[in-house]
Image (tube, rainbow, N blue to C red):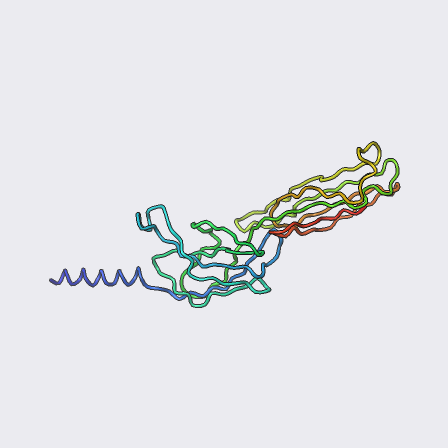
Length: 236
């Protein structure tokens, strides 16, 4: 009888341990590393992950349920206050919407979105959304003379990868126009190149001109924002 009582007490304590809830508060920053910007008006969700009904939490398959959501302010911040998180469940944060469009996320979550239960925490959630850019040439080689030319280069600006290391810049020459022997000269006043899909990011734009015999080089930064088409003008 005493043994049975001990087992009952042990079972009761075990149930309490695995089903108890810990109050958790999370201060969130939604950040796009490629743009080096915090993201306003984005929806961040707190997701509970558990094993499916067919195999349990250790079955290798899982299901997910959104238990709370919050919208970031102008500074890319939002807050989850005193969420009651179960001890026997895993939780993570994910981006559900950013830049005015719905985003998808895997049920498995990601390591930088995993939530520690209990207490107050500061967390950064990463936004990585795609956009498009188009190059628009204005008054290409007009006016110009023999041996004048225009060379345009767009290269991604490297940034720190939240998963570790550095994402290197890539890209190259997007236009190489020569007055002498160039097919189609004289060109229309406006030439727009077919849209190119890329992640929202910063691009280093380099323009080298030989115009009326004078050589100039300009370098600046262009931002390609997600979920829209950014026009990149190249003025002769």
